[in-house]
Length: 464
Image 1 (cartoon, rainbow, N blue to C red):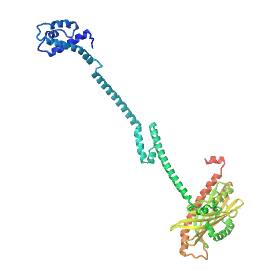
Image 2 (cartoon, helix red, strand yellow; image 1 turned 180 degrees about the vertical axis):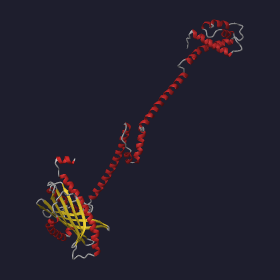
Image 3 (cartoon, one colour; image 1 turned 90 degrees about the horizontal axis):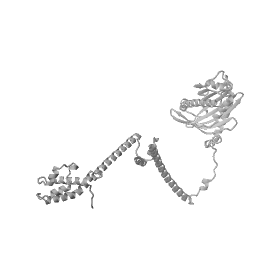
Image 4 (tube, rainbow, N blue to C red; image 1 turned 30 degrees about the vertical axis):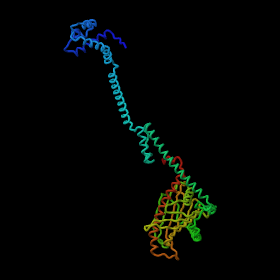
C-alpha cells in the first residue's frame, strides 16, 4: 500500500532518522552524520536535500560503506512509519488520550452522582421517613407481631409517602381481618352442618312438641303482674293489705290536725329526729318541705307519677306494683339495709291512697316491713300534702310527714336482745335510708316542676 507523504513531512522524517542514527553511532561518524550535525536541524531553509545525501554516501573514502546504505534503507523504511507514529502520538485520538479522557469523564460522572446522593440524603434527613422498600419490610415485621401493633403504629400522615405507607398498613390489617372472618365463617358452616345432621336424627326430635308448644307468657309490666311469692302467701298479703287500707282511711281523717297551710314563703328542708312514744316506744319522725314552681294540680300529678312509676334501686327490688282501685296503689318489695353487723333483708307491703280536696291534694301511705330472720316488724305512717303557696298562687308546696316505729304484737314473742337490736341498730339504718330517699325525691320533684313551669319573659330577664 503506497503512502503519499508531503515533502515537508519527508524532510522531517529523514531528519529524525538521521538523528536516531547519530545517537546510535557516536564513535564512527560518517560524512552523512557530519553533515547532519553541521547543518541546522530546525530551519527548513537549511535542510539537506536528498540529492546531497546520496552524493555524500557514494564517496569511496567512507569506512563502512554498506552500513550507511542499510541504515539509509532502514531510515527510509522507518521514515514511512515515523510520521504515522508521531501523528498517532500527537493526535488527540490516540489510545492513551482516549483512556485518560474516559477516566476523567468517569470520575466527573461519579462526582456528580455522589453529589446527587448527598442531596438525597439531606432531603431524607429533613423529611424523616424511610424509603419505600424499607417501610414495607418494617410493615411486614409489624404484621408478624399482630394487628394491634399495626393499628397502634398508624399516625396522621404528613406527606404522600407516609400516606401511602398508612394505606398499605390498613390494607394489611383488612386482609388479615378478612382471613379471620373467612375462617370463622367456615367454622360456623361446619358447626351448622353438624347440627343439621344431628337434628335430622329421629331420636333427637323426641319431646320437641313440648318444647315448641305455646306457653302463656307473663305480663312484662310490674303494674299488672303478681309474683309467685305473692301467690304462695296470697291470703297473708291480702289480710295485711286490708289492714293497711283501713289504717289509711283512719289516717286521712287525722291529716287536718297534723298539717297546716304555710303562712310564709317556704324553703326546702328535710328534718329528722328521734323521740319516745308512750305507746309505740322509740320513733323516728321526718318532716320535709319542698317548694314547687308549678300549680297544685301539676305538682300533684308529678308526685303521683313519681310514686307509682317503677324504679330500679340498688337496695330495693319491687315484686309487683298495681292499682286495684281508683286513686290507690299497692306495692310488694324486698329491701336490703346495711347495718353494723352486715346486710339485713326486709320484706315490705305498702298501700297508698290519693285524695283531692278543694285546692289541695293529699297522699296517705301505710307500710309494713318484716325481718324474717328475727320475726321483727317495722311500720311507718306517712302523709303527703300539696298545697298552694301563700306568696304566689301559681306555685305550690309539698310537705311530707312520716313516722317510723317498731310494731309490737301481743301474740308475737320477741326476745329483749332482738328488740334492742331492732330499735338501736335496724331503725338507725332505716332512718339513714329514708333520709337519703327524701333528699333525692326533693331534687327530682323540683327538677320536674322547673321543666314543666315556664316563667314569663319578664321573669326570664330578671333571672338572667
